[in-house]
Length: 272
Image (cartoon, rainbow, N blue to C red; front, side, top):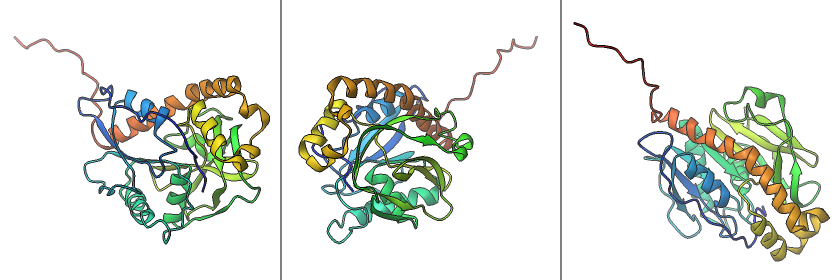
C-alpha cells in the first residue's frame, strides 16, 4: 500500500536513443505524486527510452498500442481498493493486457502489487508490519535463468517503503528475490512482466520526505536509514547495481519491438 509519501524527484527527461534510431516508447504510470520516476526515469532515458508519464488518478490512461514497454510506479493506496480508487481499474487493465501481449513491463511497489492482483495473486497487509529503509534482498535460483535478472548480484541493495505486500504470487509466476519479512520481493508474470516490491527509483531526498510525512513508516526504518550520509551511500550502490538492469530492460523492449540495429556485416569489395 504505502509506496511513497511526499517525495521530490525529477521524472526522466527524454534522451537521445543509444539503442536504435527509433526510441523505445515507454508508458510510465505514476499513481502517486510522491513517487516520480526520478532516477529510474533517468536510467530509462539514458538507455534510449522516450517516456510518456501519466498520472492515472488525474489523467486518462492510454491504451498500449504504440508503446514498446510499460512501467508502473508506487503509491499510497491499497492495490485492490477499486471502489475508493476507480482509476485502479484502468491500471489493472493495462498491466493485464501487457502480460497477455508479452509487452516488457516493470512494476514497482504498488505497481507490483497491482500486477500481482490483476493476474490472480493476493495482496494483504505485510504480516510483520511496515518495512522501510535500505535493505538487502536475496536473489532466488530461478533468477539465474531470467532474461532481466540473470546478471543481478546475489544480494542486491534496495529501498523498502511498504505496509502491504504480495502474500500469494499469481499462478505460474516465477519468484526472483525474497527477504525476511517479505517473501515475494521480486517476481515475473508471463514472459516479460517483472514486479518488484522494493524501490530502486528513489533519491535520498525522496526517502527523507517519505519519513517526514509518515511517522509510522519512519519508525519502521533502522536508525541508519535516517542518516543523510548513509542514504547517499546506499543510493550510490543501488545505482551501480540497478542501472545496468534498467538498461537491459530497455534493450529487451527494443529487441522485442524489432528496434535494435543489426550488427554491421563485413565490408565487401565489388566484384570485377
